[in-house]
Length: 179
Image (cartoon, rainbow, N blue to C red; front, top):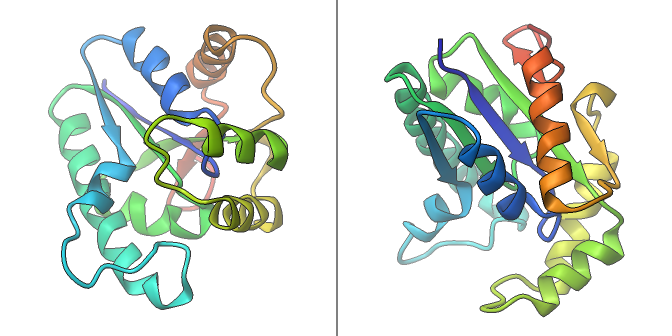
């Protein structure tokens, strides 16, 4: 049976690199980039971290969840990479039409995230937004079993760690919070 793994965290946490490595080790798999769904927004889009963007963000979360769920129900192990805080997880889960998703949060130190964002090619995120989102993840009530705090080692080693925990069901999240 196919499953859906969400690799979340603030900008610059390493989600894109790690999720690519995780998806490459699953078959058949699909890799969904949460940022891509925000790029579909055209005129009048708000920066996602602004308070006035809440309804916009819910719409994007529902759309991305529906796509991820469709792929999963279609037989693909889906890996979703995005800045998805736990505050949106119930909305995302509902949109997937799945009973369970697996939710892993990469949470390196804020300075590492800022460095990664400000030095990457094609930088689209800014430092204040990165710091704000990191703080939101730090302040959120996230069950420790979903956290990968200060991921150490190479991206391949972090991906292997996530895959091992994913295989054990450590990241499972259902409508009641824990599957």
